[in-house]
Image (cartoon, rainbow, N blue to C red; front, top):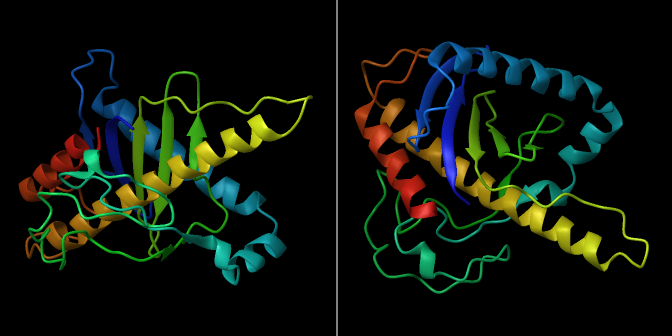
Length: 220
């Protein structure tokens, strides 16, 4: 999964962080990214309102709403790691160092709750795929990937191909959620612990920016 852009949107819909990881001259300018963040915030709110209340209540108590831990996503050495949704993996080389103030060779090693009960999680187009991870406080982390997810097509002969595409899409979402949650961990470590940072304001932490770039480089 190649990440081209990372966005962080506050709970009011304002863009507080944006970073491109490619040299494509056709990328949006700063004003267009502000409009994109506001639009995503509005679409997310609309999708949440359209989700039936009964389904939202079911998701709150449904164990399937837990996101599986995918080992070493975005961590140095993960390219040689056989990742899977069950979390079974051997420890790769070069990951013994601590990441920020979070202990261990990975940020976490257990499934975690999906706080997005009814909003937008993934947007697939013929040109890119967008993943959205929402925190409990309403902060949204957005990853725009150049990887195009396979579209589901009707399969008259059977459901094997459809099931395979669904499995591939689910795994991509799980990897993206794990990656964006780690970006959230970096945000908690390098932005929220900065005494000069004000809540809901643009992020100007060089350490946060460097760590995010390292994770994107390791993911590709």
